[in-house]
Length: 41
Image (cartoon, rainbow, N blue to C red; front, side):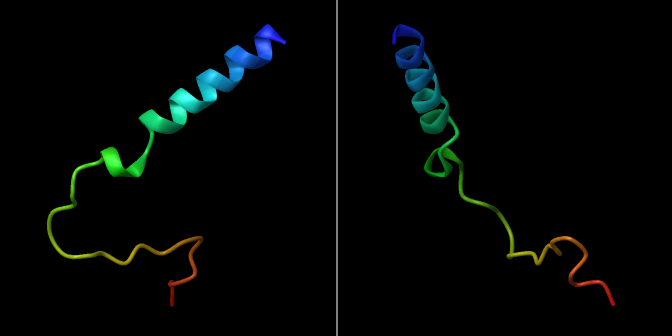
């Protein structure tokens, strides 16, 4: 039970630290990035 609680707190902490709202605003225009070679001709 105690290990599960610690694991849940660690997961919550990592989720908060990795949140997108903490990132700075991007500079420059939006770029199209192909995903899994879908855009290759």
